[in-house]
Amino acid sequence: MLSGILFIIIILVVLPKFIITTYLPLPNRGIVRADLGDNQGAIVDYNTAIKINPNYAQAYYNRGVVRADLGDNQGAIVDYTSALKINPNDALAYNNRGVARSDLGDNQGAIVDLQKAAELLRQQGRTADYQKVLGLIRKYQQ
Image (cartoon, rainbow, N blue to C red):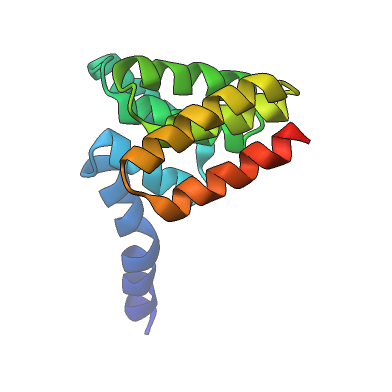
């Protein structure tokens, strides 16, 4: 009986942690860690991924998402800006940077970013996302 319980603990607790820390590429591991609530671990993974490849826009974007979740909107803006320097067509980075700017009280900057996000989403044919961003723009214009 004890060996069965031990086996279940290994499968449910030890093995997932081992897989996460050993086999997942850093950016994916960062996503998993953030999803599991380990935001600091996710940031460490994104930092390492950026050190390995400073031109990996998605790592900057993902770290920005985690920083925003932690309330570090200034850090999130820096990360979204870095992602946009590498990939200037990332509508979600413009969107999220706009939201972070609004959270810091910069509604004008937020609107500029959201307008760019809306333009890109429209060009990409992402109508539902485009409509959501237009709603945010209207909200911030009030």
